[in-house]
Length: 278
Image (cartoon, rainbow, N blue to C red):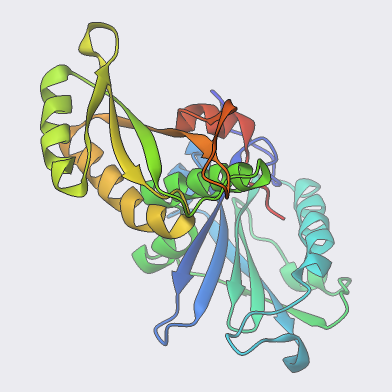
C-alpha cells in the first residue's frame, strides 16, 4: 500500500478490490472498489457523489441481471476520468458496481460537475448512459467500500488463481499455514478461539511476536469464503494482525511440488497483485 494516497481520478496507484454483494432478491452484485485511500475516506460523507449508469440493452443481460460485454465500458471509465482530471477541483473514481442490467460508475468530486454534458459524447455498443447525484449513506458505504473481509478474500482469490495456474488441485486438503502477529498472550487466545475450526499453533516467530497457525484444508474459494470471515473476526477480537497464508502446491495426482510454495503474507500479496479495475 502506498504511504501517500493517490490523488488522481483513476487511482491506478491505489489498490482496487473485487468483492460481491447481493440485491434483496438474491441476484448478484459485483463491485470493484478503491481501497485504503485516506483522502477518499475523509470526503465520502461531505463531497459530491455522482453515479454514471451504463445501462445494457435487454439482449445483453443474462438471467441473473448481469450485463455482458462490460469490457466495452473500460474505455468509457477512462474517458470519464480524463474529463474529470481536466476540471477544477479534485475528483476520484471510487467504485464500479455491476448488476441489475447495468454497470454503475461512482465518482467523488469536490466541485459540482455537469455530467450530462460529459456523458453526451459517450458511446459503447449495446449501452446507453445516464447520470445522477447520490446521497451518501451507511447502506451506500457498505455497497461500494470494501471491508476487511472483502480485502482479504480478494487476496485469497488471487493466490488461489496463482496456485491453479501452477497446476495445483485446489480442492485437495493439505496442511496450510496462517500467519498472525501480536503479543503472545493475544496470540494464545487467538489459537484457543480457532481450535474448534481445526487450527493449532505450528510454530512461534522471534520472541513470540508472531505465530503460525495451521490446519488441514482445501484451498479453493469455497473454503476461504467460510474460513476468512472467521479468521478476520478472530484477529479483530484479539487485536492481532492476520497476515495471510501459505501452502505447498499439490497436483491432481496428490504429489506435492517441492519447488513451489504459495505464499505468505497478505501484505506481500498486495504488493505483487493489485486488483485491476478492469
